[in-house]
Length: 251
Image 1 (cartoon, helix red, strand yellow):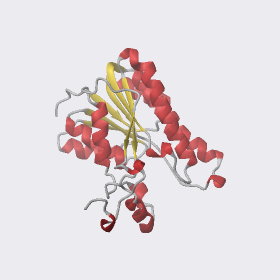
Image 2 (cartoon, rainbow, N blue to C red):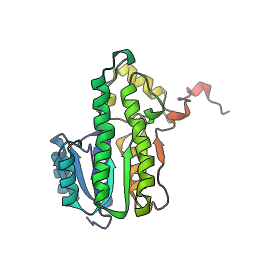
Image 3 (tube, rainbow, N blue to C red):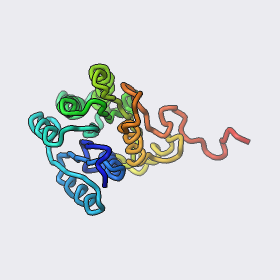
Image 4 (tube, rainbow, N blue to C red):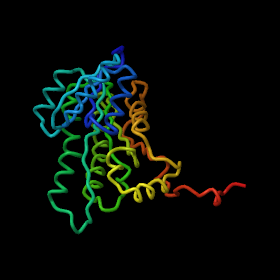
């Protein structure tokens, strides 16, 4: 495949949304560098290379600044960075610990900052950074630590867009809603049905839905969008849910 679109670094690449992003950008012709703490990222890259894609894989922790700096230098100049790596868990607010809070911020927010900063230092002018936030920045139950960390990602995105604008580096965030990943499968079938009933479009999002949004914001054709948060949640944030057929508002 052609490298005409340049080099894209994607974190949290082994599974779920990150995997979908890697696959989509690889199909588009990027040289993709897939990062994850999990060894499965090597299997992903090998499979894509077997189909002709240009994908490298690296196992590391995004909190390891020295390792991130070395990687960015190795693959410089960087054209696109997608900060997808994150963790989450659910806890009643009264049961949250400082360790829960610190771990979420350390990975979801500080890790995003480290990758973005080291990458920006080795990024072409005119590059694009896409941070994966979450629709939950608007609030979610039993996830105060995660909500706070993803809200911080939104603020970081806006601040980065200002500071990197002299180099024409566009920085945006995507806020996914419920997506069909391992996180969803950990829920009980009853909880999954409740989540489905709240989706305005009547379906759960797929990693490819988020990947397409990433592709839009990461494209060199995105020349005038920066500092924005694109909510990709199938309309869930409108708060309507799906009307049963007998309650249709149409004749």
